[in-house]
Image 1 (cartoon, rainbow, N blue to C red):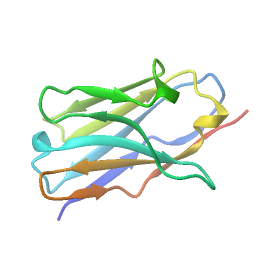
Image 2: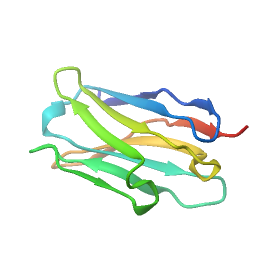
Image 3: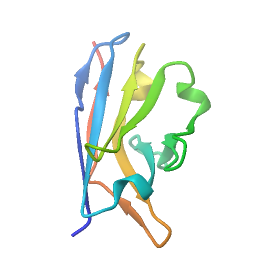
Image 4: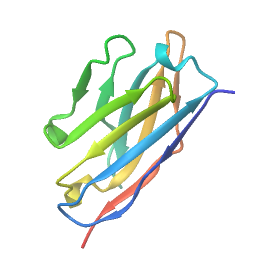
Length: 116
């Protein structure tokens, strides 16, 4: 059964950093395009970063450019999102998304709260 499991969220002070992980199971992970999205209260879900299955090309939302790094470990079936210089505006539920040639899959999300 295909499943995505995010972890690494929590309470972080402004200016701090964190690393989110998303472990995929039930997939041929190396064939998946992987992305991180986030959804803040009262707002639409938005793309944060993506990384391609072939070549590992990464793209970032303007709002996190220079502060976020997406990476993948195909041997460990895991995609990561590292963020630094966190701001209260980064507070949201962060979701992992996997896209194959046939379908897209979502994780259950992990809460990130940036507050002093």
